[in-house]
Image 1 (cartoon, rainbow, N blue to C red):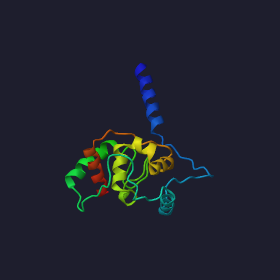
Image 2 (cartoon, helix red, strand yellow; image 1 turned 120 degrees about the horizontal axis):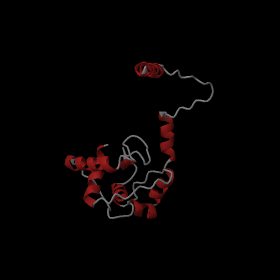
Image 3 (spheres, rainbow, N blue to C red; image 1 turned 30 degrees about the vertical axis):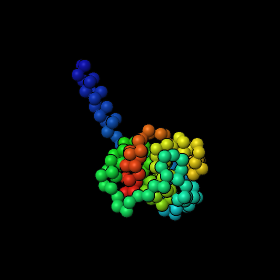
Image 4 (cartoon, helix red, strand yellow; image 1 turned 90 degrees about the horizontal axis):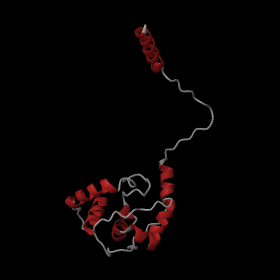
Length: 161
């Protein structure tokens, strides 16, 4: 008798789980969250203006990169970037923080490196960093306590994006 009850229970369970769920389409409001290229361009143009003269606040001043990218340095920077930066930054897409592809077309190398090594100080004293903070809903970039060498490596990697 127990075997019969167990068989019926298992059969009912299998039949109950095997049914397909039918999705009902409701009429009314539908929202599409994908951005079109046009909207992305508009959003980019409304943001913080390009400022190549601002060097930021920190240890880096008058930084110029050599013409060729140092592949070894960029590889080391990529590892650091992937381990600590990708939670908030992507190359081509805005996340919690800005997309970083083409960052050196918007900010000076010294500014970028000062932001990487000391975002807390930059957010207190640099007007561009403060404007970006507002644009990104007051999402504060955390200080990752990178050395100057690690900062330079990440900066080199950003050149490859």
